[in-house]
Length: 190
Image 1 (cartoon, one colour):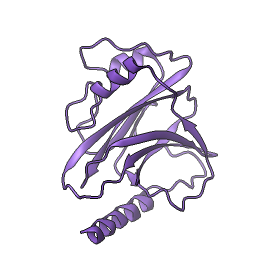
Image 2: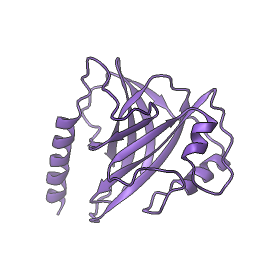
Image 3: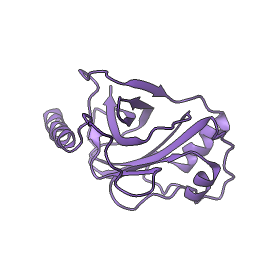
């Protein structure tokens, strides 16, 4: 069973790496015209080991208990309907939110939105369509390369296989981000 998992993971990784290369001379063009919205048809599922480090890590900033509780409820890690609007397509997407107006335009819930100082911070919310396992988000970082930035979502790497398809939702608050984020990588970790 474990051999089958590694074989399937290897095939997914090979397909994702063939479709998405991070060796761009110029930043990749956005798939749609909205500058704060990124959708990708394939998700790079990568093992971290052996990766070269030619990037700078941008880490999340600490948030209050109230902000954490709000987003954990609004973006559940189960296959429940989130309180934010996402496409219904089975693909990964994320939104870079830099203003209260952008946050309000994405929010479809009933609770009062938390206060975020968008002059200092950038909020990222997103989903990844996952096949084959139940993943849980452990950490989120932005890897800043010379010509682009990549959103990296680190997940647990479950031992057992649970065959299903579902949306994994995530969110993170970063220091103000000015440069465009061009893609997303899902990175399982033990």
